[in-house]
Image 1 (tube, one colour):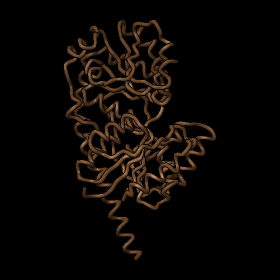
Image 2 (cartoon, one colour; image 1 turned 180 degrees about the vertical axis):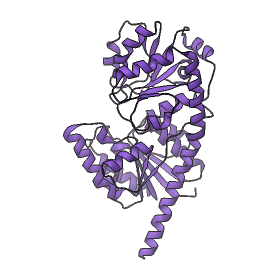
Image 3 (cartoon, rainbow, N blue to C red; image 1 turned 90 degrees about the horizontal axis):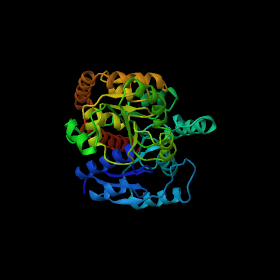
Image 4 (cartoon, rainbow, N blue to C red; image 1 turned 30 degrees about the vertical axis):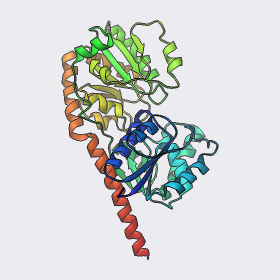
Length: 371
């Protein structure tokens, strides 16, 4: 292997963060870099191993509370891997990694949405204080949207930053025949709204459910489909038990559902820049969602963005598109054009690689100047 030795560290192994990290390690492996990943067992570890990337098992819990052995385990992994650059993904890896490294190795931190936006009160205040403090041990902050960077600056997080918007594989994710997809899924001809993502407080499926009652009155025969698994699945699905208009599909590949849907709804309470809207847009499906970080930026004028928490406005936007198939189709085509122009995965991978190279060159120049 030639090129830099890069270690990616992530507690998150599935959903959007897992997909982003898996794409990065595969790309950097193809570049001939000596790349490895430290993460718990799961989808990320499996995908990395499948492309020949060494995986260091790091048993870390999602909670910000320190899990048993997390810190010494990561310290031992860092000693074995001896990386030139460490790329930390999301809040838990950012917390443990920067405490262990303390600037001893060039460090990139990519929050994938700020932790202090996820919690309130004393915990949220502590998370913000930590991010301000840890900026001194962050050589580069990678934000996935201009909005995410704006939040950092608004809260006086002063690490040197670069914006690298998320991207999707526009060759794999393409418009496809709706009728054939619906036949494969056993769907009728009625309007379909789709929500894809982990069933969690962050993703806000409960907010969409609140607004859905008005939608089904205005659009008789409409179906709302939730694709994903998560800690709130049992609770929230129980609230709609026996209803034919709401379907809980569990985990699975969304490709056919993107093709079958008339509109994709993103009711998240907070984000950095979610992948689901980009995937839906690549499949020529219009997106409706709350105006959280990264969504208006990615959707542009192709879909409908409403104020955060405005469930009535969310429902009205869904009704507008479900009730006007021609308008929905035109919005979907415009969305596809926008993704192709701005959110091709290849661009995101190239910009991340360039950030690593630039960081190493800058660090090397600084050390030579000090010598």
